[in-house]
Image: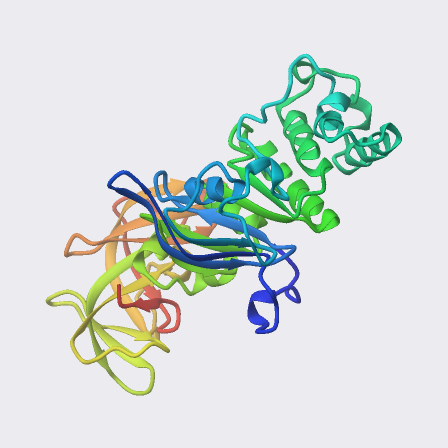
Length: 375
C-alpha cells in the first residue's frame, strides 16, 4: 500500500492520468461496462477487483486499445485515446501468460520492444541493464525462459513491459500462475518496482488479498459497474454495501430493521424472541427501515460465561471450528439457526483450546464494531 501522504484523489487540484467518462461497452445485447466514470492518478497502483465476468478485464482491454467503448470517452493525460491504436499508446500490458519468446534469452526478451522501435544500440544496452538490475535478473540474462523459474519469468515479463517507459502499465492477473508463497513475495517486489519507476500500474485481479496488499486504491466491480472505490483500509472497515463487505474478507451479515435510539445509535430488531442489537452509525436510518449489520469475525468475542457490560450478547453452541494455524474461526449456531463466526488468535497450543464442538458459548461485540448498511 502507498504511503499515507500519497492521496491525489483527495486533492481537488490534482489532474487524473486516466479518466473514464460515462463509458459503456456492449457486446451485442450484453452490457459488459455500464456508464462507468472513474479517475486514476499518476503513480497510483490501482486495483480492479471483482468476480469473473464483472467487467474488469473489458475495462483493461479498453485502456490497452484492444476494445473500443460503445459510448463515452477514455482520456489518458488529457488526450482522448478511444481511436488511438494499441501500438501508439503510451500504455503497456503484461499478460497472465507472460508471452515470452521461448527462443530468445532473457536479455533479448527485454530488448525486443526497444529494437522494434529502432533505438540506438548503446541506449538499448543501457536500458536493458537498468531493467535487469531493477528486477534482480542480472545473473540470468543469458538464459532462455524455460531455464528459469515461474517467479523469474514473471519478472522478465515485467522488465520487458517497463523497458519502453510507458506512462501506464496494465497487469492482467499477473501472479495467477505462481504458488501462494511466491505470490506473496512477488506482491512486495511489484510494489517496490512500481515505487522506484513511478509508473502508474493498473492491476486486474479476483484475489482480494492481492488487491488489498498492493493497491493505493481498490475498485470493487460487479456487473459492469464500480460498487466502491476506496483505499484498502476503507474498503475493509467502511464498506458501502453488503456486496463489498461480503466480497472483501470474512463477515457476518445480520438483517433486520432499524429503530433510532439516540444520536447515531440504533436498535436493530433482527429475530422474534431475541433482544434487539445495538449499533452505531454515521449514516441515517429511518424508523423501521430495513438494514444489514456487517460484523467482522475478529470483532466478535467468544466466552464461556455471559460477559457483563457488553453492548451486544447472544448465546449459541459451537457448530464448527476452522483451524488456520495463527487463528481459529468458530462457527456458532444460535437457537434460531443463524450461524455467527468469531475469530480467535491461536496464542496457545491447540490441545489447550478453550472451546470445542457442541460447547455452549457466549458471543459479544461493541456497538461500534459493526457497519450498518442500507443495501
